[in-house]
Length: 262
Image (cartoon, rainbow, N blue to C red):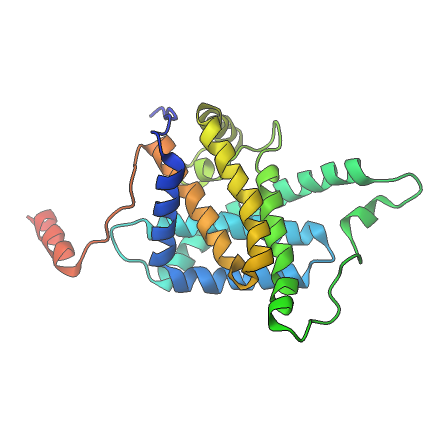
């Protein structure tokens, strides 16, 4: 079967945002627990940007998988969500590792200085947090600012020329395509919807800054929102599905089971 990316209908960004919020509400507890742990891991590793970047990408890719699992007729439990993540754990780690290493190499080439060891670019003491502020709001900003800005930088990592494209990960995991085929198909869908995807990129850049400044404790949920936004955009462009699937009630499942048995 040949998959041809579609051009999203007008009003896509607002429609995708509403649908992403709907998926975020469906599994609020699952999102919050998973992403809070990953954001705390980014804070713990903030002196090693390569590690923090890989965790940021892993959190973002995990959000796409969680959104896809929640967008099913049967209500997903925490076990279902964790099962979906385990099934795609290798894909998440491979994509996060490849993109973070490629981004680190570009970072080193841009910032390396003569006479300074290149690895110092990947380790920093500048602005490192030794002691948390006694003010809870400032302390929250200290904890989550790194994960917020890492999410903003992740958008550029998802668009490294010749290596990654914005929809490559869902094309590989949800469509089962090989790495290069997923890159080509994802890039085709991105080019065909470039204006709205640039608007999505603007959200990746501006929302982390606003959340870090004004709502730092909610940064973990920002990963869930942008991951869900990516999923619903992928779903419409590549699968032609323009709305969240309705969760079946218990009587509805019983009728469906009876029809299947007949």
